[in-house]
Amino acid sequence: MDTGIPNTQKKIGRLKSLIFLLSFFYFSTAVAFAQQLSGSYTIGASGNYATFSDAVSDLTSNGISGPVTFEVQAGTYTEQILLGAISGASETNTITFQSESGNAGDVVIQYAATGTADNYVIRLDNSSHLIFRNLTIQSQGNGYSWTISAINELNDLLVEQCVLSAPDWNSRNFNAGNVRLNPSLSSNVRLINNRISGGDHGLYYVGGSSSSRSPGFELRDNEIAGPFAYGVYLQYLTGAVIEGNTVTMRGTSWSSSYSMKIDQVEDALRVVGNRLRGSNDEGLEITYSNGTAESPGLVANNWIQNKGNRRTVFLYYNSHLNFYHNSINAINGSGSAYSIQYDGAFGQSGNRIVNNIFKANVAEAVYVSNSN
Image (cartoon, rainbow, N blue to C red; front, side, top):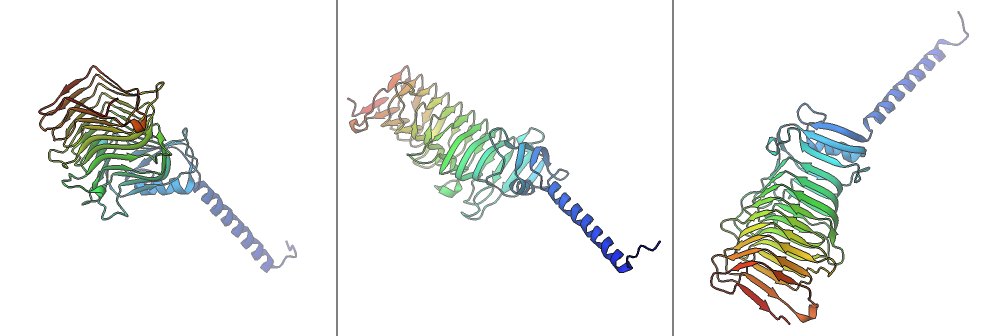
């Protein structure tokens, strides 16, 4: 039937229809691929994502609309992970990376850094609401060996049942540590039941500044083995809980090595049930950490050993700190087992020392300076 429409116009009309259909298909497909993530995904050779980097790219581009879990297939992943702020992440909408088998030894994330710019296996930069569980995170760089590094802002981080491994190190080197968290603001950082081995330091966490201390820190049931300079170094926190950890320093360590150093950690600090050994300087040092009469700090039921010529426990300018039921042993050197120093200018008061065992080799079992 002759419709009166020239063939050319018919062809143009069909072409427009085809263009419309193709455009609709393209944009609808693009929207589908750009959907926010929610639920469970798999990383690995036969998973939704071949690598961690692929998964993080999607997270960064699309954000999330619910809790997200990445189950990681067994294997070794030689790559770096850089995680920034993820749209949609919250206390409810967390992002979890975990071994599919539940065994940390089955999933190894490794990287050999070559300088300060790439000194990390995992870097958290303005990151929040993250969980790393049952993973081995292994740094392989010569002199650059941070496993997890954090900068800028860090909130709601849980590292649980992971193996964090840095090379064995035999000289003082800031860049050759293991876990290095140095955010300007942070809160609710938790390391629970991990093995942290090697490096210049095991865990170094500076929570912010003296005017902006970080709340919610927990260090529970970790094994920290073989650090050269510091087993644990903590600064600018509030209400920290350090409980049930074992710290064993490297057999030959820095001449001024510390098993645990705590500086300017305020309010109800809890250091309970830890085993600290092998330091050359202090086994435990707590400085400028002030509780209150209503919320005192507590150091209790710890076993602390020091092999060097310095003090096994050194408390310096603290207030409202209860030191109960600890066993302190200066086994080899000429340092005091327990030393506490006061200065009236700092208004120290409310410290209690009850039912402890202090044993020294040749120096004082207990030394008190400037007490009023």
